[in-house]
Length: 120
Image (cartoon, rainbow, N blue to C red; front, top):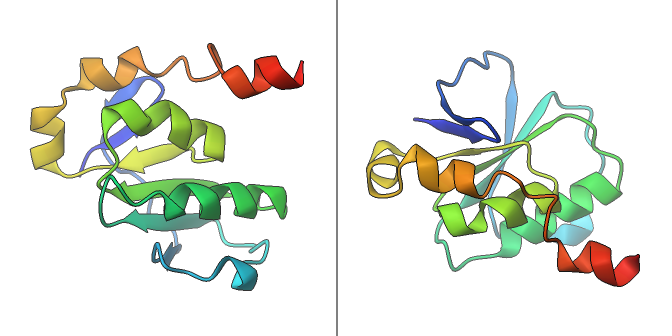
């Protein structure tokens, strides 16, 4: 499974413990875990609950590695990064349909952030 970061596709080299959260995790139950990595599932690209979970984890103090896994598409990469994800895990089929250049094109996620402009 390719891992997408701001620099493109990479192999998954993480070997530590991973806490997996399904997209339907009740946000009320989230706490700032001391886990090294939390991975949030995206069963569909139309299911945005994972973005909310990521944002809430960061707001509640989670400092570890945060990974989105599943059906996140290249167009959603900037949103994933702004929500607090460090990386996205996709399957080989999605990587073939949306090659690395489509993800890297969206890697400048801090630029053109309308919410930051509104707050500024």
